[in-house]
Length: 87
Image 1: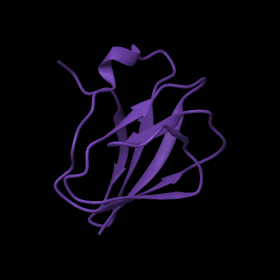
Image 2: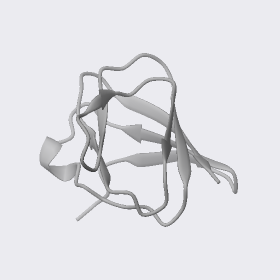
Image 3: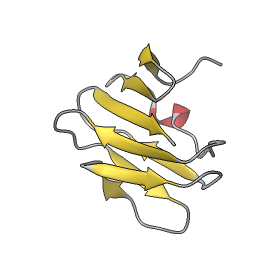
Image 4: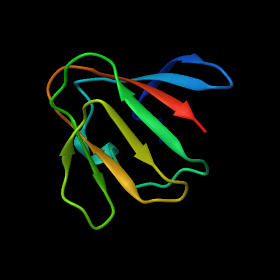
């Protein structure tokens, strides 16, 4: 199974990641990360993020995701471009 995104730039501090508008929503699985992260949305989008035991919210501004917190991305229109700041 391939990853549902493409990393465009990777450094020690951040990742620029793109999710394609043509992705099958079934590929956007609940998952956990091994480090705290802050997600910055690049541009306007109608994609959403859902954290464990919470309703989905629109991806905008900065969103903090704690290490090992369950979360998933919910597909919107057009490509999604985010900057993932590692902490």
